[in-house]
Length: 224
Image 1 (cartoon, helix red, strand yellow):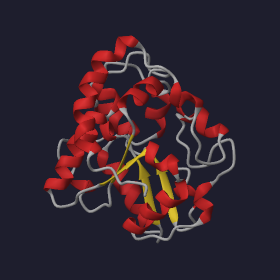
Image 2: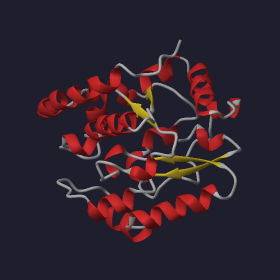
Image 3: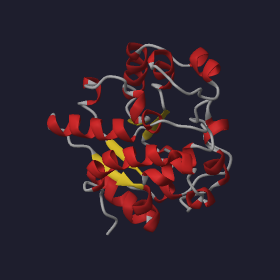
Image 4: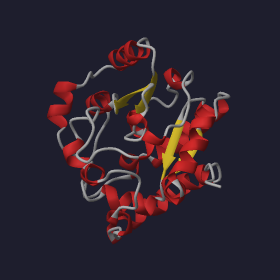
């Protein structure tokens, strides 16, 4: 998201479905800032889509950063006309990072199961999404972004490789809870948190997550 926010022809929206998700999902864990998010973001899918359409009519490409589990429907037909990109990382790293904010995440909380389901839904509808991987990206960010942009049909610019410390104006109001590492960064780099250990208590969740990760793993765009 931070990379595409630097592109002059791209308008960025940070998790516009978050309020809708919090209002309608059957959550087993508390999300930090829930009350503020619900008071700020639209709670209906129609309102979110109306906002996206308004932004798109301004003439720019629209980059929508979304969490897979924010799409509550098993067949979210509104994403069929979009160019969909699924960003994944190994579930062990994902759980280690996620558990720093939400102590005991479930399989549904981390989104990998939903991401795999969305991939299969889109593939079966003839709109197979692009699958990219954070480790592949970090091997050579410029080369990977060039490949991604070419597939998406937009120009790559060097500005996409760096940004100012402290966040961007498009950050959601939840940034204070989730974006501490990226706020310290000025570009793509391996974070110290990427090597942190996953709590042993999450091993069962990891075992479940790996089943869905395996569906996506074979479709990852290689950085070569």
